[in-house]
Length: 199
Figure 1 (cartoon, rainbow, N blue to C red):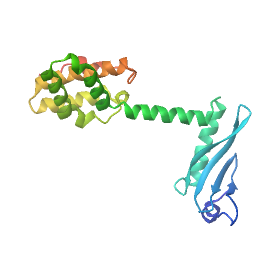
Figure 2 (figure 1 turned 90 degrees about the vertical axis):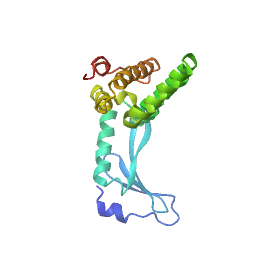
Figure 3 (figure 1 turned 30 degrees about the vertical axis):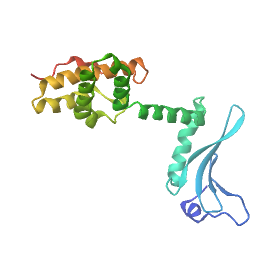
Figure 4 (figure 1 turned 45 degrees about the horizontal axis):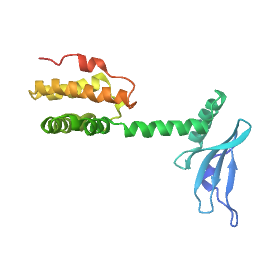
C-alpha cells in the first residue's frame, strides 16, 4: 500500500522510461524522467487489459485517487467500461457547453432572420443581448429552469418594462422550442412561459 510520503519522494531512476509505484486494486502512480506524476487504474474489460487516467499528483492526492479508483470499479461492476463512460461524459459536456442559451438563440436568429423583416430581426436580437444574454446566455439550455428564467424576467419587470418582459418570455419560448427541435434541449420549462408576469 502506498503512502503520501512515498508518493512525494518517488523518482524515476536515470535511464528508465518511467517508474511505477503500485497501490491496491490496480491503482498505481507513474513517474516520468522529468518528475511528472500521474495516477492510473489498471483493469480488464471484455478480456482486454486497459487503464484509466485518474489525474496528476499532487493535484490528486493518494486518498482522492483511491476514491476515483473505487468509483471506476463500481462502473466496471455495473457492466460498463469506465473509459468509454468517461468519453461519453466528455462529449455530453462539450455538447452542453456548445448549446448555451445564447448559442442556440443566435443559431435560431441566423436560421429564421431571412424570413423576418429586417427591423423585427434586429429588434429580436437587441432585446436578447440587452435583457437575456447577460443573465442566462452562458447557461447550457438543458440547465435553465423555470425559476431561473422567471427571475430574469422579473428583473425586467422591476424597471417598469412589463411588455418587454412579456415579449421576452415568448421569445425565450421560441429558443427552447428550437432547442428541442434540434436536440439541444429535451424539454421546455413551460411554467416559465405560461405563467403570467405580475401586472
